[in-house]
Image (cartoon, rainbow, N blue to C red; front, top):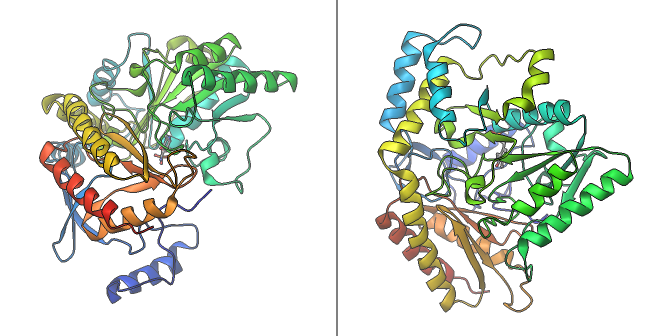
Length: 439
Ligand code: PMP
């Protein structure tokens, strides 16, 4: 896999000497596995709404962070957190009104069949729990994910996260299927995606592996951002269910109105998943995540195995989660994501008309992808253009990143409080950044 938006140690350029020293200490203390964004790493000290500030007070437009989804340090969320933290923080083994109240409000955002929520602290934990429960329900082990999926970092889930690289072991029960590449697949994307899933199922069965689950990120973020036409996932979901497996919608990326006006990625496909996992924007930066499921899926698991997660679903986390829901509702952020997302898509499409190297522009709500190619006919990825634009925008104080197997897809994913005025700042900077690429 090509390298995506990374600082290369030793290439400091004209970085502030204080930051060079901080990088040195960080590397010494955190070890070799961490990565920093950008050729010139960014040192930010404060956030507010869609803006991030460095220590000199310079403002950067955040067009990337989907965790601080209702805006950095939203006062309503901060207040809910500090109020509850000042009163009590325990865990789910005591009765607490806020835990139940939040569960009720959260589940009300899902189709009625999804009736239980089990709280965790991270998306990885939510997926790990979902797979454990899926194994217990289906008695199967075989899991299907896309070729460059990312679902998390535990041993079980890193095996299902090929975007971590080939170094990470994959286990004989895992099958990778091609992503629904709407730019390259000619014809019916849903049928092509389902064909991959059916082949994976047949291959498992031939080796005596019972299918357990199809686990997909509804926006195919690490595969290169492929929202696709609403409904295209249906055929693949029907295939896994027909084989005795279940459909787990990983909503860590598309969830909580990112693909607005819909609240969930699966809602775009008119599907009701057997299980859903959520995280990232759920706490606007506070670590809270969850697995949500239909009751029959967890009935036996619950009877035979207890579930306790020390921090998952604690009263502070639940107060925060509830405040996030309130902000999305009160500020109409799902509608805003639809409206401003469409405006940005339109602006990027206009830019594509002027630049041959922009092969494709795609998106749902406020999750957009823009693909650079060497040639519109061959569609060969042009990673250097993505690297140039990401770093040029950073110099213009606009933050995005890149993704995809060819590292050539811009990942554009601002907080949901992004307005048309912010979009104009972004589009203007994009125009200059793309024009400054000299191949
Ligand atoms: N699923 C998806 C689709 C993700 O993008 C991520 C995080 N990038 C995760 C799961 C894992 O979440 P976490 O980092 O909170 O463990």
